[in-house]
Structure formats: C-alpha cells, structure tokens
Image (cartoon, rainbow, N blue to C red):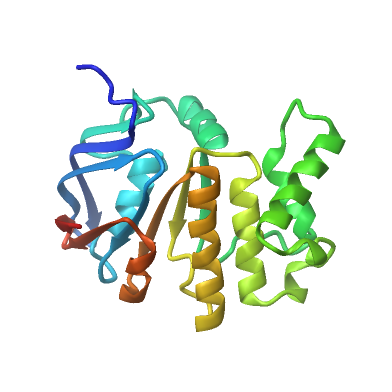
Length: 230
C-alpha cells in the first residue's frame, strides 16, 4: 500500500490491555486514527479513558498488544528500542504536565540538555537554546532555575525544550493541568503559534473541554474507544 505523504501518524486497529489487581483493563479498544502532517489535534476525555495510553503508543513509549502504528511512513509497533529512541530524539518533542525540568539546571541548561549527546558545537547548542527561549517569549529568564519561575514559565521552558531539536511532532500530555487560567491561555497560544509558524504537528491530551477551539481536529475518547472525531 503506498504511503500517504500527508499522513504523519496512523493508528490501525490498535488494542492495549493492562492487568491490575488480577483484573484485565482494556485501555485501548480497536482504535483507528489518522493524523495529518501539520494538524493540531486534541485528544479529549475523562480521566482513565485511555487518552494518555494512546499518546504513549503513538510515540513508541508503549507498545500495543495488536495493531499498527505508522509514524512518518514507518510501522513502529514492533520497532526495536534503539530505533524508537532515535525516532523520538529526532522527530518528537514532549511536553509534560509536571514540567519534568531538572531543578539544578537553569532554563537554558534544561533546554541544552535535550541536545546531548550531539555532534553540534557548543555555540550552536547555545544558539538553538536561545532561539527556542525567544520563540516562547522567555529569553529574559534564561539564567533562572525552576524554583525561581512560575508554573506558566516552567511550562514555557518545557515548550522551548520540546522544539529545540526541531521535531516534526509535539506530544503534550495535559500541558495545562497545573496552570492557572492566564498561563493556560499563554501556553495554548504558543502551541498554536508553533503549529502555524513551524508547521509542526501538535497532539494535546486533555480533560478540559475549553481547549478544544485551539485544535482543527478533536478526538473524543471513552472507555478506551474513540467515540467521535470532529
């Protein structure tokens, strides 16, 4: 079957189960989803509906029990860990609810750390980190440590870290879950700007219905299934 060059990620008949306390939990049930290159996609649903599991499977952080995950033309559902690590390092940027910054590093050092190990010269690494901070309007905080920043500023550092290696896709798991309303708007506006200016595919997992207008595709999940796409 020829590969559709406009398709960035495709999930085909994907299933995933977990065992907890002797019970089988079906986290993903016959999931089919196509995400085009350059789309802004929100995967929406209540806690426990399978949306974070789907995000992990789409990125190769977790493997489906059955089905295929086609990422940029490659079936990664049975790829080796070395291959998956290389793919994530080259093509995917991650944004987390808990920020995942290293407290002993400054903002710019947290971003530079994403580029190691690398063949780039130190000056090029620094230039890329500065450019990423400028893109998220936080250059003036480059020498501050996480403890010196607000939640919204930490998440903007997280966004800068996600884009510094110029990925094709950004995956954001509840990126505004720990933010106040004003910071939530700022982060979502930045994600939308990255999507439009850099033509980066954005996939956001959230339980917040107010974020849906930022996307051009909203995927609603319930009980491990996709129940609507609009």
